[in-house]
Image (cartoon, rainbow, N blue to C red):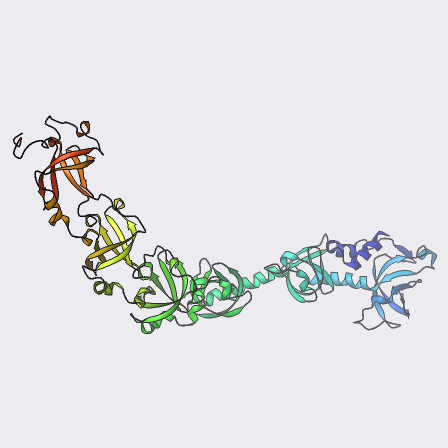
Length: 557
């Protein structure tokens, strides 16, 4: 019979949506008349126990034929059946052709009768939005079955908790409270939600908490979620944000270094936005800020040890203690080295010795110096390199105006182009020097405050303009040279290594010359006559057209 199959489905509990509907479906089907009374299939009757054996219990339901019930329908938790006991049963079917033959047995079910009565009782006492307590019996597709006063109701997986558990099967065997979401009388099923009840309770606690919460209060909370910027802490109805910067006075890389999910601890309320229901929390505020006594512990001039915690392009941050960090600016790292980036000298994790240069307590800033832990080598420069001293060095860099020569580790001197040669007109230092070249120079001057040393290369020999040149080049002498440069006003003639004289365009020829390049070319050998030697101006005047003339001849031309 169809109804028997439906009742069997009820017993297994495999389809919750149909469970109660199937249990009640068809009550009254297959009626049989006995005298003036009607016995209906799926009717709930009261009977008396006539006999008990190992497999069945024989029950008289008030008619000529008795019914039998499987012995295992009596739970171990209830007293065993005894002859004479009254018991509620469900009439499942008539065997051997029905009652009219008055010789067949009736199949009864005690368990199904109890389930139907439980359902009817629940329907009388439970309404939507009621809070009910039940026992989780098992996990099924899409959720859990919860026994509410003998009736299995459905708890969807999404309604088990606010945050869905990894395995809802962990709730099996637990007693839980739920809110009745829906009673579907047409389908005879009930859907409940534990999540809705929790949210309802949280909303009430949240309302109460917001009414009593004040800035400065210390509250216990539980970590519910961790993000890169902080942790959300449940204060008992509402979550507050514990920002990473408020977890510790010390520098931390990630909130997980300080807190864990479900960890419980005390926090201080820093700020409350009641309109947006946002709360800022602090953990480090439970202890005094280390900056309170920084000026006392680290007065200006103190030498202390620290750990490099971060390196930026402009300097390195050094931790003196938890929560106290100072900045070593790139300019305070070395007296002599030209540091392009702090990473050239330090890296995170390095232990360094520093000197406290300044403290800004309001901004919580400390300026530190590394180079101040060593003697400033420039304090010894004046003594080590007095003017007139001869030094050896390596050309480190060339510029338009001169060359920088490193004479000691990190100490450079400037060799200006005007101090490279007594006789040669140097337009760029590359004409005489190259990078990496080792040279000897003379110290000309030392400016300790501006940290500058002036060097001279030509000063390594006597000035020929005060001796040799006036003696070897006298007015009227005829000498040989080479054209080195042509300008619009004349040509320069190389007389010897580095020494040049000027042959003015008017002294090139007896004829008027508009363009010197029409007469001579660079590299041409030329015979010229010395007109004058100006020691003060370090110039030699030459003439080509007067080579064959005697002194005084043609001077008026």
